[in-house]
Image (cartoon, rainbow, N blue to C red; front, side, top):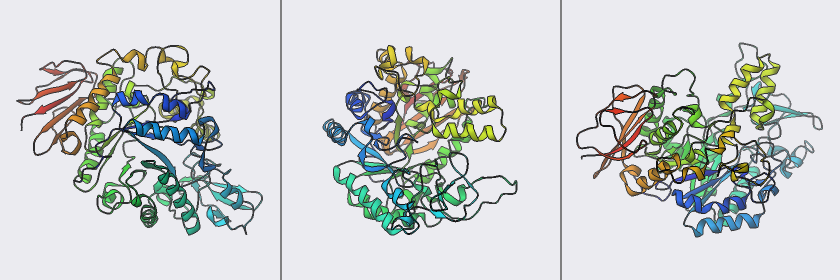
Amino acid sequence: MKKTWWKEAVIYQIYPRSFKDTNGDGIGDLNGVIEKLDYLVELGIDIIWICPMYKSPNIDNGYDISDYQDIMEVMGTMADFDRLLAEVHARGMKLVIDLVLNHTSDEHPWFIESRSSKKNAKRDWYVWRDEPTNWESIFSGPAWAFDERTRQYYLHLYAQKQPDVNWENPELRRALYDMTNWWLDKGIDGFRIDAISHIKKDYTDMPNPEGRDYVPAWGKMTDVEGVLDFLVELRDETFAKYDVMTVGEANGVTTDELEEWIGEENGVMNMLFQFETWYLRKLDEPCGVNIDALRDVLTRWQEAAEGIAWNALYVENHDRSRIVSTWGDDHVYWRESATSIAFMYFFMQGTPFIYQGQEIGMTNAPFNDIILYDDVKTLNLYRYKKAEGMDHDAIMEMIKMSSRDHSRTPMQWHGSSYAGFSTAQPWLNLNPNYTWLNVEAQLPDPLSVLNIYKRMIALRKENEVLIYGTYKLFETPYSCVYAYTREDETAKMLVVSNHKDDPLKWTAPDGATLLLDNYGSEDANKLRPFEARLYQLRK
């Protein structure tokens, strides 16, 4: 197993719109990220991944890009970005940015040209058809929009104002590579590559036995045969020329494909985010999450990658609802379940990602009215489900569980007005629990979620076995306990996390030394509700 800087790092994802506002407009900005860099240093972070700050009309909060080489006005300027990059590097950290290659904004000059005429030189830079397929957009509704001027349909897998670029066109690909290299030449340290498994499509209808208006088309627009040819070219024309880290958002990619996608020798990127755990929600599961299913998925990814590839470890990001509300108990055992989930994923083999607010256990917001939501995906879901006749209350239950807005409420720095995020009303309402759930309140408490994360990060840095050691499931008699070992030639660790709100009988293995416990002390005879432990075992 090759040793690299990005394998040994801990990565912190920033959603800049919601991180810190410095100019009082209620919207986070690049200077706000700079202001909080020392907080990230103290947490133990090595790499910052910052979500899109490119120029954008902001239909999808920056993932609809109108200029890849400029900064969104509310975020700051390119000079602000250059200062951010310099300040990150001055603190010994690295900076990774989002690379959005599947689509642009419909306000991008490329698309403005493309839609101006069927004869325009950039017409084929986007996907145009006389007749649409029957695909459903990932953001609900049809995946094709009719253009009145040229009397054709263009493809948008996401929002209508996010037209897909046509990767079959070599000139388009060249323009994307040139843009990518422009950022790499600026000195950034890598990319999180957005929606990258969608860039190759099979433009045929989906089977539709139920006669639906639009049909989910994952098999036609996700990991389609030929996508790797594009990605090999992308790698060779860009990333391979620099010492950078790449992680792909790769919905649909399976463990059978790891060597081709992220293999140490010939992979097209370094890591990828798997999607198999996304749909394991709380519902009526006795453990808050189906631990048997979670164990099967994560173990399969761990074992498949061993010796040939490297996992990206994550439980939250800007597209997921808060994990303590999804898999844990965000009421009675909020602190315990937030940290039990943390132990469970953080110590596996791979590079751990922490999403802003996760390190203090931020929860889903109790927004009961659709007017409180901002996310285009959420609002489209409400509109289309309503049109299909679904009951308002049923739709709201879906939204309250899974809306992306839950992860986008402003960062909760302290308990005073606007949670220390801004001096003005934020662009998205704060979660009301900011008055007690915030960074400032957790700093002095050694057992706070924040300080448990700090200790976990430190232990990972202090123990190489927790980075490169082999993962192996550790059998227990309890379906709600997730336990595994990490082992190398010199050391062996055991991670145990209880995901049930009941105590369980427990005896540690002979010779085990407790290194960390989310209760602060060990009860030798039981695991308490949502208790998690890290032991050093005798070799």
